[in-house]
Image 1: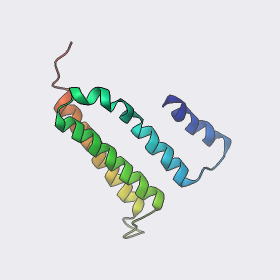
Image 2: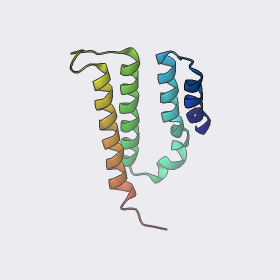
Image 3: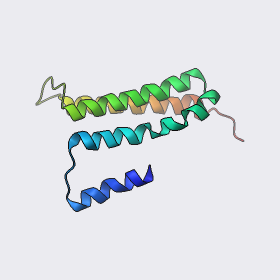
Length: 110
């Protein structure tokens, strides 16, 4: 994940313009890389925590896909695909914040 994160600014510094769909695909892949560990952590999580992880991830993914497609664009000058992307990002962040407050903060310390 760190190699992908470092590659972003490195590519941008060269001035190379990657296709929007490719940039979005990399962002989505980076976000879901943590899913590789879900088999190890899911048994220790309450169902609500697992549901929140999946819901937040799906909201981020849907927002990214809509941004890449530049669709829908209901009111282009006021509230378009870019604003929808931001709304979905804010809702996803709120889901993860709620997950942390509900399941991480109350957890007993080792």
